[in-house]
Length: 232
Image 1 (cartoon, rainbow, N blue to C red):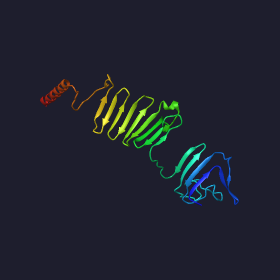
Image 2: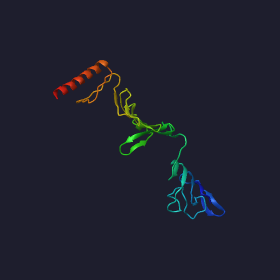
Image 3: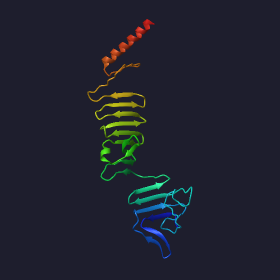
Image 4: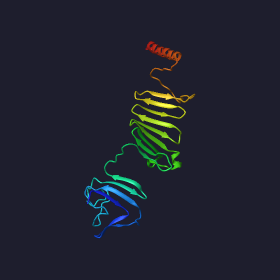
């Protein structure tokens, strides 16, 4: 026998010396398996005593510690399966795109995009249900440095997290940004305003971008300092 195996639903080992393999087209589900068994255990189309390897570490008659299997399965109902306890590597772009739907998952050299539905009972899950996609959340990992979160339910609300900044921006232009230096920037939308309910205490300088206002605040601050010194 060989360690590189193949098996399918339409052929079985009979044990009959005159016809070791028999065609069997009435199998419940059509499938094709290609796999490796490091222990050279038989597949069901090879001579066997009833115990056959199914292409996985857990389903090998070799017994415990049967490591190293890898399986590709094409199945009539389950689709395509890649099964291994080792790593699965895809070179180039990898895309999950259901028929007549948009891309739900995409990995490419520029980054990763995941579109799913937030389920507070089960985290984030992929879905191509049009009703659910209307409230989907899109995750993008750009250049392996930034995590970008977009909401479909609230149009064009974007949250970006990277080693350079944390920012949230709405489609109307309103934005909150915290950069790597610790600066916090509030940018209202066009004709918008920043409103503070409650007290505002400033311990540092106030710069408005208006020379006259900046001079007023500097004079006011200097007056406070002189008043404090005179009192003491």
